[in-house]
Image (cartoon, rainbow, N blue to C red; front, side):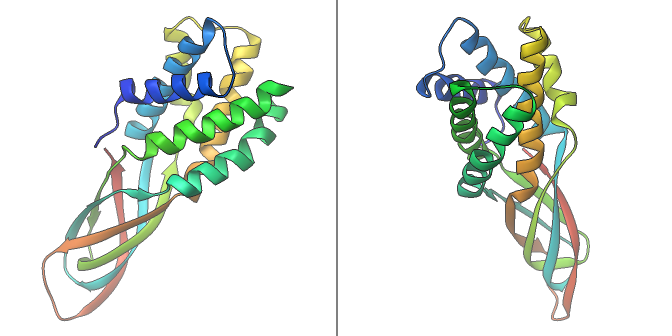
Length: 193
């Protein structure tokens, strides 16, 4: 499993279509969101962990435990952000449900590779640390010629929703490395693959 822009675009196109949104721009919007989200996760999001175990240096690899949490958080946060940026009417609830489904499905492809400088064997618990989604996703909207005030509002609503939801993601990673009998705690970090 890995972050894959084509798979992500397919998830967003499918979710937008299944929620009742239609029109010639839906595949373009789905492709732009999926490509931008993949780039954002690869370059703009890290994992931060609190580590517990034994003294040493370790690494970990795992999946973010987030599908249900992301689905619930996007479904609750998205309508508020959509309204704040002027996405009104039936499009608001359709967009919120399709975003929740697509983001949740995309996160099932994501792996985290982590490094733990003070714990050699143990367990890491933490969360995802986002930067700003709009920095990474605006280029994908521009690359498929999606412009205009309403599309910029849509982009802002989507990016703000993603930025608010990702820190709610729970990360649980087993740590494997040098072995010791001395208990230790510390902090680690990781990248999304």
